[in-house]
Length: 233
Image 1 (tube, rainbow, N blue to C red):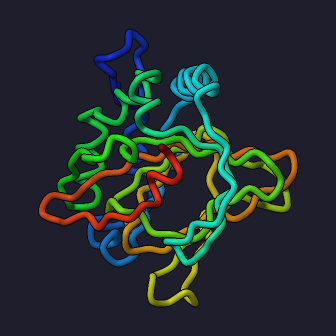
Image 2: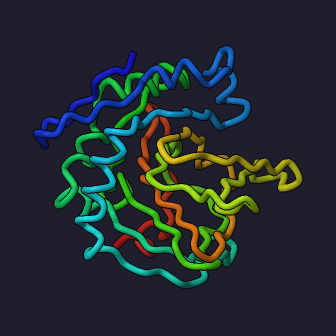
């Protein structure tokens, strides 16, 4: 049954289906996460919760920023996307901000990967929104400053040719790249500081909107780069 996940900062009751953590079909997920670095969470956001998030995101789109540049500090890979940073979300999106701090969600993640997750200390990168909605939009190859990311799909391309897929590989071996597709309402956990990852370019008429939650791991240092401030400040 769906498990309630309630934000104290909003009267809306946001219900996530935390049973998604038991539906990923992976045995010994903490061992798998250390080896693979990717865990899918299909259907984490049920229809009603997805509607609440879409409404809130639509209301704060006037505070979004269009990005189109080469990220020098990430091997000169492209950024073509629309973003909303953590400060704007904290101030204007209480459902999103409350979900980031939701203890049942974080506990389920910690138990699944076998590591204790902590709040990211950078409010700009803590929770962000990435939207790809113009032909050729892409989030080029990179690694994250924080070690663990939860990515939740608010919108996802549905074109038959496929686009906007997650692609990831070990930093030291690009020949081991994998691609993964996701639907609206799905999510995944990524060991985002060890896996080089990108979003493949989207086609004309397609949209890919995600919330990205960044977490520190107890006992691990965070390696800082200027990438988050360039995208979200």
